[in-house]
Figure 1 (spheres, rainbow over the protein chains, first blue to last red):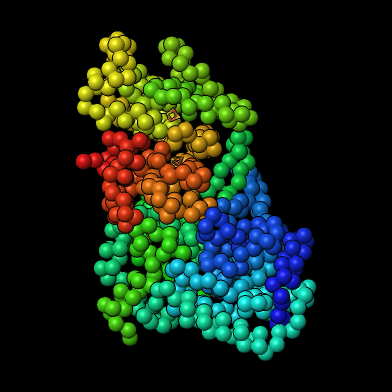
Figure 2: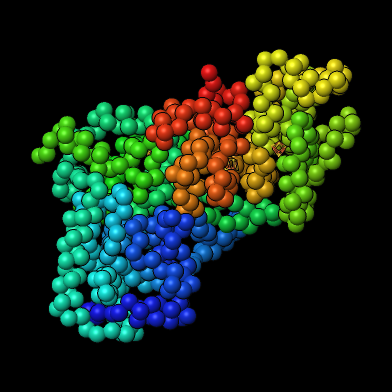
Length: 344
Length: 251
Ligand code: SF4
Ligand code: SF4
Ligand code: SF4
Ligand code: SF4
Ligand code: SF4
């Protein structure tokens, strides 16, 4: 895989050429915030963003999607979105989240709907230039990423360093005007990485993230769950903005012929009232505190046990910003447990 | 199966929800294809009239309306409350904030206020008078949700109506939260299902779909504090659609 140094103007030319060829989703301003959206011109691209309102997850797992169409008592037909696209400007912590989701959606029941979109995607990741108000990727070991992307861009001030990570990325890189990155450029990139490994840390976790599953082993009956959930709206905002939340609900709707219809899935959230409701109206996590605890266990114990110990909170900080009563911050919950239970 | 008969009745309201029927356009023809819509108002004059589904629009503000509603209920197999006026009493409940209804009448109707047809009583939602089988929330209703509910009924399926807050749909749309821009949005305690219509257009949710079944109003009080506002700010926002409902903060 090669590494190039590319002048910023040349990169803009490359992006505009790309837009002419294929559908490009890039980070852009949305009011005084940022978000991923279809990109119409390189002029609108904002690789200096702090954090996007939504993670890029929605391009693989949309808020609502049709899974299949059916006829009652008859045949069904799976529905797939099958269009290639380029996702431009994914930060390392979000890239780590996508890598985790890729693993999860291929486990057990292979999710063809997710994987079709994922395989159609070309991801150009980029290192963080401006830390967001609540990022704590440094604490989670996700401030820098080496893998999953097709191309990784690093802003070194006067130029980008671009490295390919896959054959698809290698081809893309070949189309960018630039020179092989020299030692000075690579050194600058190293210093961006070194800076981010420390500096994306607005909340500091008091332990190595690898310790979190063991911390939670002893925390099930801790008072923190009740205390925090007292002001929880059960609004699911913390779920909806999280790059590693993937729960969904499935619902059918019929057409007016009352014969044919479609099956849709939509994002769900473990904090929501009714999330665990099953047949017979039985609900096994009907307390807000049960659901509040579940999310924090899921991020640092249940999901890690499925993906080789990786912690499923990547420290993007979105839930911290989204939670109105300010109780969702995983770091402050885990730190509280460390204060009370110690480490080890 | 013969086509089920649907009858539509209006009580105290602006008929804005019925207007949404007209706005169904081609879907209205689909609806008529699978159900006989009995003309509203006239329906009551045919004494032998039976209907499978009664749709009630508006809130109940007079004694004779209570009687009329009970009669409709006794004739209908299924009863649907349509729109905020019917589901929660809606804007009409504002008057329940005043103790002296004669004063209210004088203020609204002036010298005509004593006329018998203007007799009034505190506003009730439909389910304060009779049992309601299904609720179509909102002011006005969401057309898609209404037709979904009707199709579920025709199939004998229970419709899935959200009992989670508007924030869920607002966040799924990628909106920035209006609280961060100084608006007192009721989204965290109001039932979703409208697709976060108002916040998606930059306007706070004022609660037309009513509270979720378990709204955390205590949390709302703390959040108000955190944003440097007073509980009065919250109260004034809650009365428009929440008057005389239990979660609304008074006093
Ligand atoms: S739990 Fe919060 S900080 Fe962690 S990945 Fe999810 S949204 Fe980001
Ligand atoms: S923790 Fe915060 S964001 Fe999550 S459901 Fe509760 S109030 Fe909403
Ligand atoms: S709910 Fe709103 S739109 Fe519908 S009838 Fe009442 S006031 Fe009119
Ligand atoms: S704007 Fe309103 S509905 Fe949207 S997230 Fe904020 S509080 Fe919830
Ligand atoms: S956002 Fe609130 S006020 Fe607006 S339509 Fe939805 S429930 Fe009603």
